[in-house]
Length: 260
Image 1 (cartoon, helix red, strand yellow):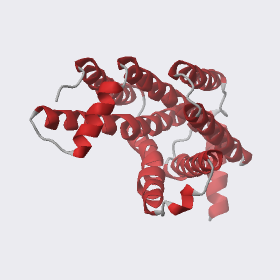
Image 2 (cartoon, rainbow, N blue to C red; image 1 turned 45 degrees about the horizontal axis):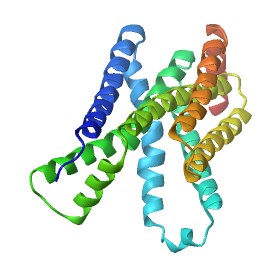
Image 3 (cartoon, rainbow, N blue to C red; image 1 turned 180 degrees about the vertical axis):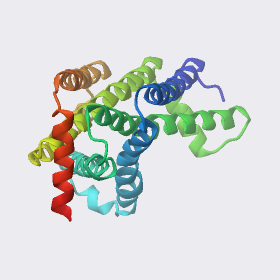
């Protein structure tokens, strides 16, 4: 069974780019900030636990009858709200409690990168690796319904779509950094409404992207939408100002006194 080599190469390049992102992040963090690897891994947990450990299994165990009676807009709304809620909680727990002794802009950026890259690993990396393994089995002569379906879908997918998906995931990483930095800003300034704002923004973006796909909007326009969100996040991260070091120390000490 022959599969388009260009599509296979596109998936290999996408996985390689993802691996390079991870290595570059770890190297840069090691050079510029102490305990950065720990913060990066905590940021990954902020996605992994809410989504992979909690949300994905819950959705898989729910009977299909629960969703079959819903119209597409209701289903998209529920999925977007649930994803945004759990990820916002996970992000807050990482930045507020697990990184309590280190709360500044750099921590928000590093945790956000961990969150976004973990999302890319599960939504892009693992899927592409699975597809490449299926293609390998097909080339070895293994035949099954699943292998035929996967290889057929890959052959029918234009090569540029794989790069569009890679671009989309890369832009989403920037968005995740912006969300994490904003939550850290809210923690330091004791503005709990920031959580509500982040939750609504996250849900709105997820719903908008899913609705575009639902209505068959071109991948180019979809990436433009995400590019606008990523650009806004990057500008916010660049311009946001955090409290001075002594103010942050006083904030942490006051919080610890209240908890005691």
